[in-house]
Amino acid sequence: MTGAVDLDPIRAKLATLGRVHTSADVAEAMRAEGLLVSDASLLETVAAIRRDSVGAGRLDPLLQLDGVTDVLVNGPHAVYVDRGHGLQPAGVAFESDAEVRKLAQRLAASVGRRLDEASPFVDARLADGTRVHAILSTLADPGTCISLRVPARRSFSLQDMVDSGSLPPAGAQLLTEMIKVKAAFMISGGTGSGKTTLLAALLALVPASERLVIVEDSRELAPDHPHVIRLEGRPGNAELTGAVTLTDLVRQALRMRPDRLIVGEVRGAEICDLLAAMNTGHEGGCGTVHANSAGDVPARLEALAAIGGMGREALHAQVAAALDVVVHITRMSSGRRRIAQIHVLERDLRTGLVHTAPALTFDERDRAIAGPGARRLEELLSRS
Image (cartoon, rainbow, N blue to C red; front, side, top):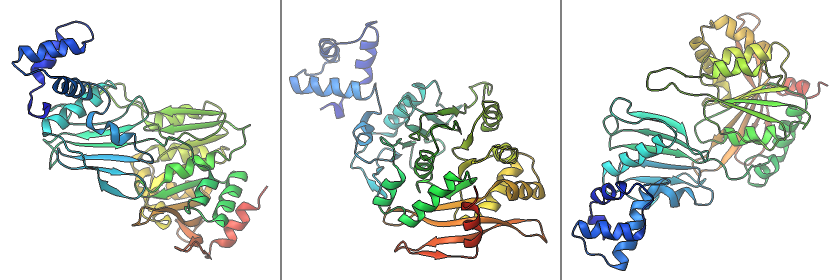
């Protein structure tokens, strides 16, 4: 069995061929190492060499599973997969941390990134759209960790979300109206809650005559819309030069005549330029943001704006004038994702600070409970 065979000497011999190796080359290299060559051992060795040379190696079958969203490697002996129902053991293991590290380095190298002691972590997007994050065992316990976020293989419409129970029909109607009137909004939620999926479904409702310009740190949004420009940030190279930030891209997007400007995930100083755009005639701007609840969004935006040098009072003034609605999505313990809250933004005239007011809250039975912001939401959705 190849599990007990050191493949490195075989790989080294194959590397000297100067061409693509064949099964006969592998057999010859095995014999040179004193290994018994049978049909079974040759097939297994060829498969092992290929597995460790292309794709995601042992993780490839997991990435092909129907409905998979995440594959996580916590060192060599713990691999988890999420197929929409929470993380579950994948039944896959690596032989050693060195094997995990080798896979992580190969994935990084495939997109021109380095992963070594001088640069012990990497965050990148593979050619097929899969987002990969890796961090070496020198920094992580129980070993080298790999996190793969798999892009959706199909677009989900708002009706799909209703059919799956993620969104009650009444909520779908309100969100449709929100797009129609070009309300500016943020979708909030935790990691893996479905923010990007919901945003893509909403953008698909934008009239085909409108031009969408999407800015993302790592490309994930793929709305079903005929006129989409997607801009993607770029990290610096090994010399710490050449980086393109979301702030840079938002500023470029404003020169590209967007009918709607979208930031896939607001996570830093780009919030300042996005809010400025929303306040200068760019209606219908939107994005997602990490937050535990809709009520936490103003504080979250305040913290992000501070990175860009915008003070608290200025941020709240910008938010009050620019942002209309916050839609909060949650992921339940069962793994089910659902729209939990729709809030509107209100400004305290005494303090000048912005807070969110619940307009509708959907309970676990999808019953809509009106809140103090319901009238404000009704006014927003009735504007022409």
